[in-house]
Image 1 (cartoon, rainbow, N blue to C red):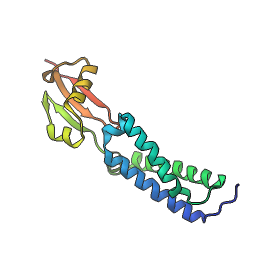
Image 2 (image 1 turned 180 degrees about the horizontal axis):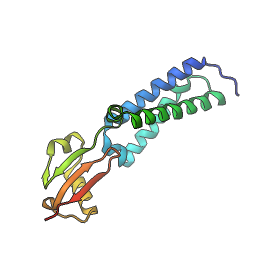
Image 3 (image 1 turned 30 degrees about the vertical axis):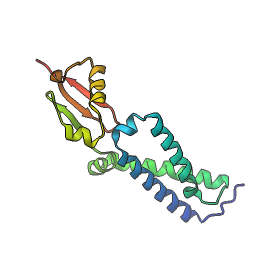
Image 4 (image 1 turned 45 degrees about the vertical axis):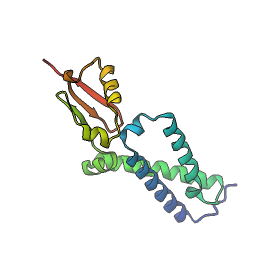
Length: 155
């Protein structure tokens, strides 16, 4: 039950490889999807965790392997967060940069398309801030966490 049947170094390599793979997949899907998951996105995320479980610990079903893998995942995540906090270039690489969607009423359609944000989603974010027309928007920025921040234009 507690006996680890896998080499601890192999377990470490497995955890690092699966973490890197899952991190890359999540970064590729875009900010909006991570910050505002639709029900089908949540289903995919749950299925992803289930499909990667065997890659983490292989045939080792001991409590020790599960606890060590979970501890390593948290440790790697803390390390990534620390590196991101300490080094701006690493932060930009790991977390991305905010994207300007609207500046002074002008919509950047190319960026909307890149981030897969529809006009209706942009308008919804504007309405949350009490704005009803693009002319009243000073800026709309897609933040790293998937939230669209909107600022009012002063006349």
